Image 1: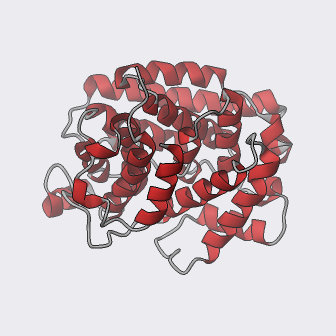
Image 2: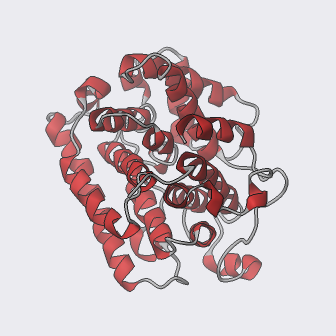
Length: 334
């Protein structure tokens, strides 16, 4: 199939739309969400502009670093790492960084600012969803080799979340975005991700000696844990697709999404339950008992990559926070 028209714009705006909807419901239980918003979750963007969370803010930081590095191809760790470091530190001090950012990201960015090597600055035991909520831009860049895409996805995760499952989940998320924008049928996505997961490797060029800092026996043993946990999450995804109804809490089988592999699986579930209806997908992510903004933002990224920008409500693009930046990245990668 041919690539999806305006898929990069659709992905990035969809991520922000899901983030804004999910921000209204994060930390609420299902009964409260249903009482306030109905069975299907929030119907419209909240406010004008509709404010997003750190999920979209850090996605923008990843995108800015990629754009700068790609001015001097090929994409390599030595070109993108200093840019990501700078943009992450800028995010740390941004006055708009007041949307309940994750403690792991905050501490890692403080460590980066203090001048620590990134392999020392990261939180080695954390596999929080901050590792993959922001990785979509890596999946949107055309012309990368699989090695570059996997390495960049793992590195951006590892700057703050040093657990191997965070790295593998980020790689799978980036490839899901890439395949969808290139026209992969949604029904084929779980099997493709399972195959990719089995092939996930430790990218030493990108990760340096991270495995030693984490206290693993070796790089293979380090990354093998990430593969196992992500494969288990994909098992739960397939179980949920067979059992879950469209009206169910999506976290019931695939998990609440606070950690990276659960965020991936639950967001995929929301997308795959509504592959032709992007608004329904992010509403389902927002109407969940877990990390609703991260689940909905990833579901929006998948839906937008699959269906393109024109699938979203026409009036939303002018109401979402950071619209100009999202549009600039979209133009670069559409």
